[in-house]
Length: 132
Image 1: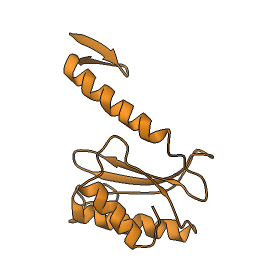
Image 2: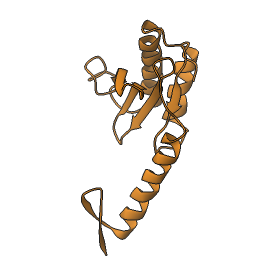
Image 3: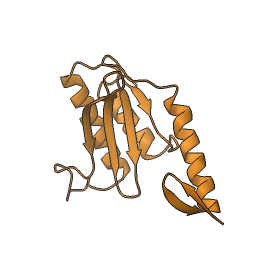
């Protein structure tokens, strides 16, 4: 059976999976709100890449971002989703935060489970001086 969800036509099992992911994202997002003092550290994990953003939800502004598909990582060993790349991104986002005098952030994992590359990214950011 076909259903319409998020302006796409999807099949029944895919609808269930997408609905569960959306509910999980909203359940986490309603508890986390970024400010200028303590922004939201949003992590987007795709099949190939990782993207990390510092977001001020009060102003609706992205304060800084870094991704494995950005120019400085493209073509290197950190250009794909891996634990080494996550460690490097965590260190880089902590550096960006310290340049803007941000000492703490609220970790937003989105619909992903907190293990593997996400845990590695957060551990690297904490080790580099960002309180999550």
